[in-house]
Image 1: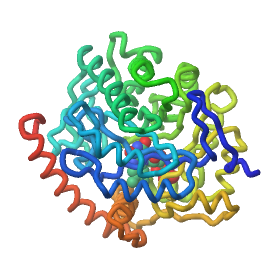
Image 2: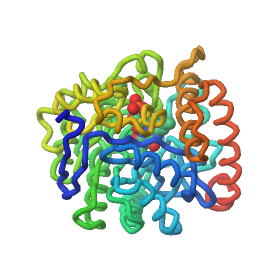
Image 3: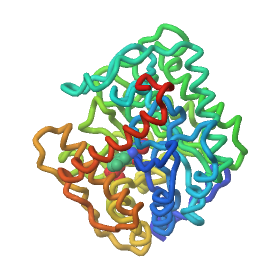
Image 4: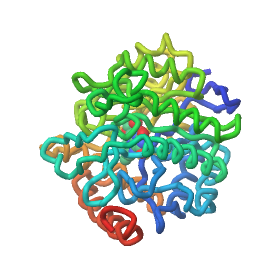
Length: 409
Ligand SMILES: Cc1cc2nc3c(=O)[nH]c(=O)nc-3n(C[C@H](O)[C@H](O)[C@H](O)COP(=O)(O)O)c2cc1C
């Protein structure tokens, strides 16, 4: 049997039928009230039928005052559970885990969202930095509130029928901001040493574990490195994985952030896109020491590479872009097909705009499937224009719905 086809039983007792995981992709498909609707169900029906051993949702926000994008879905104490129940069951027998996230300071100014961070350090996105607000340094009360929000969202995900959650601590969002010595300059027990910087993540993991039943899956997505001088690095990642070891079912490894796009987990630039399994050399250094199953995500788009990653000792492979382009890919890989699915490409000069355009092409593909129009992936430049228009519509609705509760209102 090929490695990808072998089952895996996780600490929580959940058995995955194979090693292919549909990695998180922010769908930006929220309907009214930031709730999921029939478009999400249609999309997850396709992935459920596609044969992945585990399906992880795009990030779902734990606080409706703080969204990464105005089309993001929120699950909090005022959400109706019924739409989430339909989402959880749409994938049929494939286990679906909800990725839960808080963007921290990575909120665009125009959403009027609440920008929280460990310290008052604004995102450095070069010429685009002014799009981000200077965040409010979190008080200890804010920190406890965030812990409680993650635990509440995880509990509600369980109530809605999801089989687990993945806590997003990668890509420069709030938990990754706490881990980073460049963003976190606190001098209390939540900053300074790595032990202190990792405290928020570990408290959240424990709070989530304390709120869900024992057979419920809990994963963490972590950067193998932030790829910034003086930032969270591979040795830090090794120690955090050690601390997570007996607390979680699996740790997914990615890398980068909005400030270090070239290696960002978000589909980045041509050079990164050319490379397959681009974190393998670096993250491979963590595999021998880890006592928890590790999943590697980034640039995996044919079964031969997936086999190589598993052969290196990773327990699971995470696939995002290729599964947007071809939701049935796992079945083909399990049948021995090694055809590569090539990512969308763009010739736009600016690296940042090019990355946004490629990402928009992938998001557009999710929207097409969700709307029942299984058209091929659009050229990135066109996709970006359509994406901006859609974002404006989401933004107008979000601001209307939240007038009075966000800074925009
Ligand atoms: C459209 C899009 C949306 C994404 N949204 C998320 C997300 O919500 N959470 C997350 O952890 N990663 C997100 N990612 C990153 C992917 O999970 C993955 O780490 C990255 O795309 C590299 O894997 P790939 O080469 O298989 O696409 C997103 C990527 C894309 C292309």
